[in-house]
Length: 214
Image (cartoon, rainbow, N blue to C red):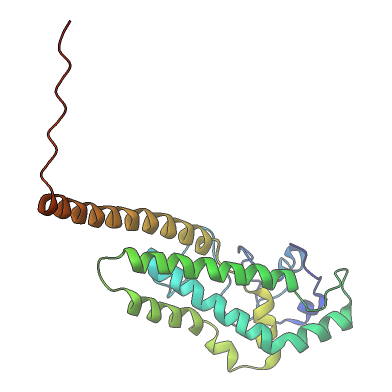
């Protein structure tokens, strides 16, 4: 997806972050040389689970949903800052809103995570929604430290952060498995009801007589 070059990242002052993520707002060429912000952690590799995130699939997807939701909330807050950066340094991509396409993709991803969680909740034989709420809060909490810092720290952290690749792969797996399990549970229930009705309302139909040999 197109991303505006952000020369303002050269103003940062710490170590470089890991740029492995599905939705990233920092251009690779800049992120590779720019210093890291002491803020929300960047996404890890596809096989990594960020520190503090739940390790079960449902909890992890809920964590991703919370972290991404807070990321989108921060965007609405720092939009004037992003516009000022584009105005100061210029951008080859002309958009009415900064990072419009990136934010549209992030909102679609947020819906995918929510759909995967909903499927898991419906398929689970035990209530798991409370675990989901707690995991969402953990995801949102990765932004709590940088929210207490300066506005520049917040903008810098937002520019560097990206959704871990594992969020997408885990959400896809969770939804697929939950949907199949949910169908199995529904089918089993319907079959039992049909069997009860058949036994109570009508005699069983005898099997057809086998054909006589010639």
